[in-house]
Amino acid sequence: MDQPSAPMPLLRHRDFVRFLYVRVAASIALQVQVVAVGWQMYELTRSPFDLGLVGLVQFVPAVGLFLATGHAADRYDRRFVTWIAQLIEAATVAVLALATATGRLTPGLLLAMAFGVGCGRAFEQPSLQSVLPNIVPARLLPRAIAAATSASQTAIVAGPALGGILIALSPTLVFAACAALWLSAGFVMLGIALERPAAVRQPVDLKTLLGGLAFIGRRKVVLGAILLDLFAVLLGNATALLPIFARDVFNSGPLSFGVLRAAPAAGAVVAALALTRWPISRRVGRAMFTAVATFGVGTILLALSPSLGFAMAALGVVGAADTVSVVIRQTLVQLHTPDQMRGRVYAVNAMFTGTANQLGDFRAGTAAALFGTIPSVLIGGCCTIAVVLVSTGIFRGLYRADGYRPATNEPGTPPAEAAS
Image (cartoon, rainbow, N blue to C red; front, top):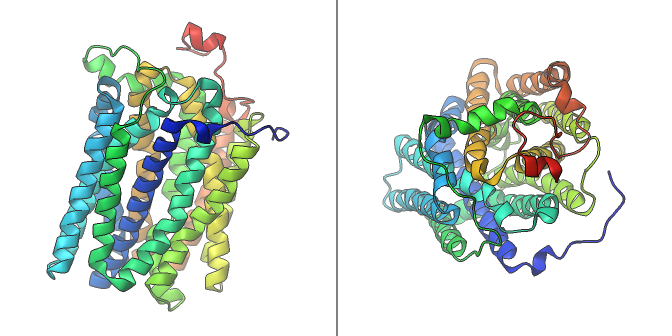
């Protein structure tokens, strides 16, 4: 890592602060919703497989809609697209609040509304993530990404614990609070001013719709970062099984479940704050491979946890490692991608990495139903480490990457970008 550098005045940037609120509010709403849906599903069914289904139904729209979501982010005002997506998310959890209040909550309705949230997030993520370079100067972008990640992860710490508390108080209140947060985030998003306008949009045809896939295919470093994250999270993600750890392994209730859900984000906050102060700018490829391997080690420690406190510490390691990997990957994608393609590229990125969490939840639930909870988590951690070892040979360009900027001879590098 570099020597400590003087903090940049990001918090004096009014529209960046507004952007942070949107990220924080949306992150809290999502985490509270995840905790509430997971706990309610397990209360209704006591089935690990059904917990996995929650992840699967949120995975489907991200894959099925990625061409449309990327096109929307590059063709229309990203602030408006984010607002509409957050209205959809608010509406779905409002339905769950009403169903819970009237005693009509069912596993089928939980899955249907999880699908609705997945549709909203499919549009929200490419637009929300790709708008940041239009808000802050390019020289502040790596630090802004780390700061936004830190703020988001701080919200993720609070979200699960808040969700556990609200479930204990009133299941209806959980979903109503999510709706209010998503609504407020959407309206604040509309008020953000752009420092630099979005680039001129290209006409819509099959070539432009598939442009994100083609672009990533030419950028081997970006492709490697995305696929490494995809397979690591797909094989090693164990968060869907935390209700089982809380209730059946540690004999606890919803508050302990919320604490377990918050533990990865606590580790993530520490890592993100460190990256904000001491950003990684050299040997970024090796740092990413090390972070993903550490993610696997943390997952193995979770499987072997003898107590709730040990499990929390293991999950903290998982969260810290994941944040280092995420910040490196997002910075690579941002700096390798011209603005006029950023939405489509982020839609592909979200399809692979974002949905890996949902598909990983389904994988974890299915494996737990077949082999048991502890063996499935242990196998997932070992598979993550195996992915790192194999990927070191396959993605040599990523492993050897020393900085974030693309090489001037990299295929598809725009002249202005190569020169920067």
